[in-house]
Amino acid sequence: MSDTLQDGESSTRSNSLKISLPTVLYTDTADTETPQTNFNESKHSLPSSFGASTLLLSSPVSLPTSPTPFTKTPLQSRSNRSLDEPTDSKHQQNTQSKPIINTGSSTGNPRNKCVLQPGHSLMDWIRLGNSGKDLNGISGRIRPVTPTELSTHSTQEDAWLAIRGRVYNITYYLPYHPGGPEELMRGAGIDATELFDKVHPWVNYDSLLAKCLVGPLRADRPDAEELFDITNASPKSERLREPSKAQELVRKSMENLANCITPVRKKITTKSDDNVKGSPPSKIMQSLIQSSDLPVSISRRAASSPIKSDKAQGSPPPLRFDWIQTSMKLTISIYTGLLANPGGCAKITDGRLHVEVATDGWLRTVQLIPDEQIKDPLQLRVFSESGKIEVMASKVEHKVWKNVGVMSFGAATQISSPRTLDCRVMHVERVSHDTMLLALSPVSGPVIVPLGHHIRVHHKINDKECIRSYTPVGDGWDNFGGDLSALKLAIKRYDTGDLSPYLTSLKLGHLVTLSGPYGNFQLQKVRRHNKFFYICIS
Ligand code: HEM
Image (cartoon, protein in one colour):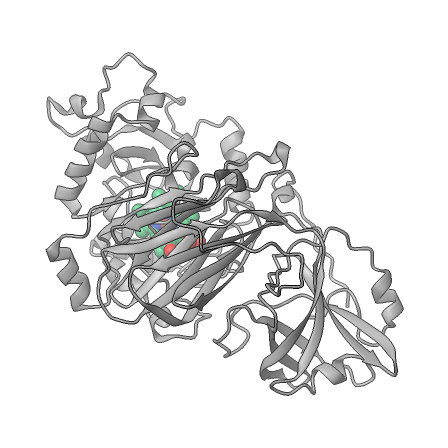
C-alpha cells in the first residue's frame, strides 16, 4: 500500500531514496514543459517527422466488450461467454472434467482467464519459441493441410487448428493459453476462425503462433491449390506471410461467405498516409447488431501508426489500434506492443476522445473525432503484459456506426522528469478497519503511473515537509467508477505515523500534493531473465 516506507519513518529517509528515471507524468497546464498536441491540424497535415498520423477509420469493428469481475457497469459485468458456450458434447465433457478457474488477472483482464502452471507465462512462451524447439511438429516445414487432415489433429497430445486459412499446431501452446487448454481445445481439428473472433479478435495469434504454423488450409478440392498458390517458386513461408492481393481477395470472399465476417488488418506505413477505409456492414448484419446489444462480429479494421520502432535512435515503440462496437458501446484498443509497460488515461472533451498513452518513458496522445456522438462514462483498461489499452465509450444514439471517425496520433514526447501537481480527492472508501482508499484526480491534467512505478505524497507538518511513497492500486479495490485520470491509493493508517492519519482523514474535495511518477522498472528487461525472487518486508 505504501511502498518502501513505514509511515512513522522520517521524511529524510524518504527523500534520500535514490530512485532514478521517473518516467511519465503528464499535465496539460500552460506553464508546464509538457508539449501539447495540436489537434487543430487537419487530418492529413500532421507532420510525419513528429511521428504523427491521422487516419480516417471506416467500417465498424466487431465484437465483445469484455465483462470483468472488477467492473462497475452492467455491460462489463455481463458475461460475453453467451455467444461462446460450447455446443458439442466433446467440449462439454472437457470442461466438466477440468473446470476453468475464473480468476481475473493482474493485468486487469476480466474474462475467464485461467491459472497457468508455473513456467507458462507469455514470456516463457516467447522463450520456448526462441529456443529452436520444433513447434509446428514438422521440423519447421510449411505445407498445405486439408480439412480432413486437420480434423485428425484434435487431441491434447496432437492439436492443430486453423484461423483465417492458416493451420497452426497448438499442441505446445495449450498450457500457455491464458484462457486454458480446454478452451483452446474447442478449436482443435477445425477452422476456429469464428470461435476465435467471438472470444478475442484482438489477440495477435499470428505472432504468438508464428513458429507453430503448419501451412495453408487447402480445401478438399482439386483447384484449391490455386487459392494459395502453393506451386509458386518463391519460398513458401514468405508467401504465407504476404499473400498476393488476389489470394487475399479470394480468401476474404470465402471467409465472407462462410462467416459473414471479414476481419482484416491493414498496415499503414510511413510512405502511405492512406485513410483506412472498409466496407460498411451489410444490412443484415446491421439489423442483427441493432436488434440487440450482443457483440456481433461484423468486420474489423486495424492499423499501425507510422511511427517505426527504432530503439537505437531512441524512438518510441509503434502504436497499433483497432476498434470494435456494439450498438451501445464503442471500444478503441491501442496496442503498444508486448511488455512496453503501458500506462494510459482517457477523457472526452468537446465530443472528442483523448487517450494519453505512456510507454517506457514516451508519451503520445491519441485522439478520435468520432463520426457520431459518444459520452461518458468512459472505461479504461490497461493490459500490461500484452500492451493493450482499451477505452470503452457509450454511444449517445444506440445504433451501428458505419465509420468510427478520424483517428490521429500526436507527436511522441520523451518525458523524463517527475512533476509535482495538486490532486483533488474524488472518492473516499473504507477498505478495512485501518485502510482507506482514496481516488485522487489531478487538477491540471492526467497522471500516468506505469506498472512498477510509484508516486510520492507531500504534506507539511509543523513546517517540515513529510513525504511518503505510494504505489497506486488498480481497479477492483473500490466502487469508484468515475474519472479515468484518477489515481487510487490504498492508505493504511498508523496512529503514530506522520502522514497516514492525515491522508486517512481527507474528505471529498480536499487537495493533496503529489509528485511522480518515480521508478526505473522496465517490463522489457524482464524478458531476459528466467528466475524471479519476490522480497516481502513486513
Ligand atoms: C479458437 C479457440 C479459442 C478459444 C475458445 C479461446 C478462448 C479463450 C478464453 C475463454 C480466454 C479468456 C478470456 C479472454 O481473455 O478473452 C482466452 C484468452 C486468451 N487467448 Fe484464447 N481461445 C482460443 C484460441 C486462441 C488462440 C489461437 C490464441 C493465440 C495464440 C489465443 C490466445 C489467447 C490470449 C493471448 C488470451 C488472453 C487475451 C487477453 O488478455 O486479452 N487463444 N482465450
